Image (cartoon, rainbow, N blue to C red):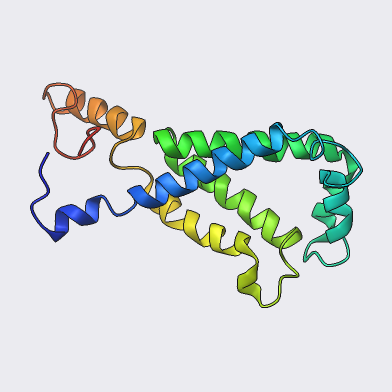
Length: 172
């Protein structure tokens, strides 16, 4: 595998974004799952206290109310969602679905937790939402399980050896 020009470099442009978002979301999910204070319904540092604190400033207070019906369940859902999205993004397994999940998590956090950030760019959830969009569009065409699966399907469909087509193989 050699990189011969700018066109080849462009094929690798999403890899740093995939790594950053994947690692960040895996870390965020594990951080929540291992923080007993966060996974409590109430008290300092809990998901319940966080939701109560943003209730009056959220763009969509109905989402906060939904989370407050079961703050611990919501905390686990967010943490496990972040973990699944991060792993899917890093490995490139159902990469577009993982990216859409990441975008949905970021959107919901932007509309609730970071909505009141002033100026808006102080709230990082909007930036994460925008960062997920290229991965929703492009998926993980290189260095991914999705690419390997695509190469196998393409190889069988055209009579070539498994995964030998240039496009869609694990390593491009």
